[in-house]
Structure formats: C-alpha cells, structure tokens
Amino acid sequence: MTDALPIGLELGWIERDLRALDRAGADVLVGACFDDDSPPRGAAGLVDWRLGARLSRLCLGGFLTGAIGERLLLPARPRLPFDKVLLVGLGPRATFDEQRYLAALSDVLDALDGLRVRRAAIELPGRHAAAIGAQRALELLLIALGQRPAQLEALSVVDDREAQRFVEAIRARPARRNPEARR
Image 1 (spheres, helix red, strand yellow):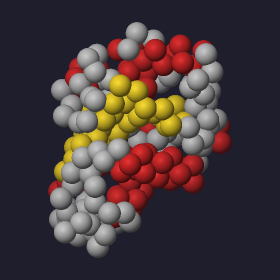
Image 2 (image 1 turned 135 degrees about the vertical axis):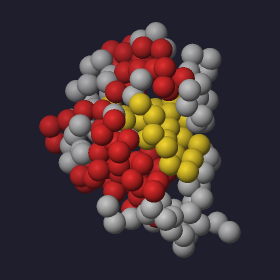
Image 3 (image 1 turned 90 degrees about the vertical axis):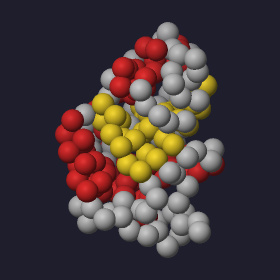
Image 4 (image 1 turned 90 degrees about the horizontal axis):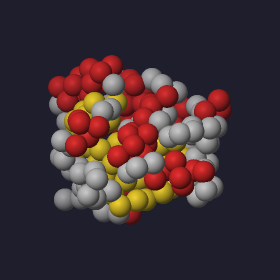
C-alpha cells in the first residue's frame, strides 16, 4: 500500500461478530447492503439480529431497499453499544465495482462528517460480500481520508482476519500529516 494513516487518526480492527461489536468503542456503526441482500448480511445482518429483525421488516416494507446512494440512520441503544447505526445502499451486487465502492465510501465519510462523528466502526462497503479485496478497500480508504479535513479521531474496521493483517501493517507505518487537517 502506498498511503499512510493521517496523523491523529487511530485505526483499529474489529472482528465481524456480535460479541466483538459489543466491546467496540465507537459512536456510530456503519454497514452496507446490496439491493439483492435479503436478509441483510455482514454488519447489517448482525444489527438486524440484535434489533429483532427491524432491518428485515424495513426491507420487506420497501423502506430500506439497498439502492445506490441510499442512507439510513437508526438509533442503536440500548441493544447495541453505539449511539447510531448508519447503513448505505450499494445497488446490485453483480454490478458493484471499484467506482461504486469509492462512491459509497464517499457517502459514508460525508455522512460521518455531517454527524460530526469522532469515533466510528465501519464495515467498508462491499466487504461483507468480498465484492472488493480487503487490501484494496483499505488502500482506497486511506486515500479518501487523506483528501478530506480530519474529523475522525478513531476508526475501527469491521472485517475478517484477512483485513486485520492489512490494518496492522498500516498501523506499523509512520503517520502522515493531512494538509486539510484542522490545527
């Protein structure tokens, strides 16, 4: 990977598991869903389980569709240790590519900025279905974070053990200053 972690951002990893999420120290949990995910999968599926199939009911009622650009913000407490859950739609899985990953990632980062989130746990868009490789997803995340003002203080990636290796490799590198960062 070519980019380093911006100075001041703590990067972590959380296994995609309910018990691990229960120990996460974040304000918001971010998940994503394809429009052909039924029921929701990945972090969204774990949230659905914990919230008594609330997301599944929203899908069945047509309120949550998984369409490209869709955003859904839900309160998470007291069933989850987060204040909020943010879900983004990814459209059809068959047409998901790097461009759609970048668009969804931008949507997520814009939403987190708008909510003034400091600590987030994020399942990178499409990773729950291995629609993008862990290393590439993290490379693009670092580039995206480096191109915007520093808002996040801590970001935990919710993923499998393969991603953990890449997160640890990033953390081992020297951090770099973001020229857009607040002083």
